[in-house]
Image 1: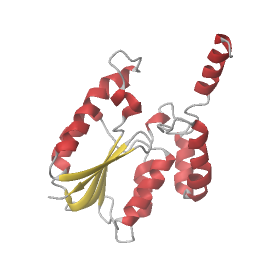
Image 2 (image 1 turned 120 degrees about the horizontal axis):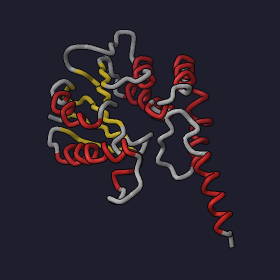
Image 3 (image 1 turned 60 degrees about the vertical axis):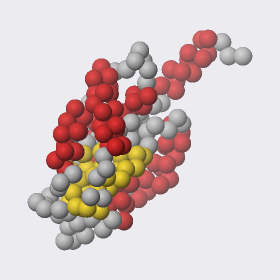
Image 4 (image 1 turned 90 degrees about the vertical axis):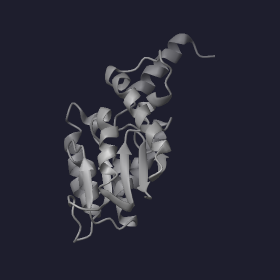
Length: 207
């Protein structure tokens, strides 16, 4: 049986191995499995401009704010599948997710277009997510998608009230919970919440 010292040492080692990748907010319990996904499926296919931007962002002290590489790959394929041409992004940071979107668009596509949007991605101030939703639901076309990032919020959405959370995580937690509850009962949309990155909720407008 392992001693307390050995267990504590292992815990520190495990913590030291976390968040080594830019934007690593994966909810997978195994960092090794997440690394396998990146090295096997994501990085070999990552476009060179996205790779360069990811590596530059890695040097920024707030690099945890960026979209993770696996989520960037997901967004890129999603936009191709729905044949999106007119898109909008709210909250850009260094532009990794925006670049993933731009590279997915056809030659006649536009990353900003005043009219009916095929896809809108929101990764901005969480305390305004509901305000964004009230405006965006009228901007996305029927059949179009809105994607809200960070809707599982570091797993904090299921954390007990006395859980030791970082200050910013605790502050925005209630706003994320409020958004999730509102999206779940909004009759104008169909939703699918995915544990990709820090959680992304896709909303398909149906009316």
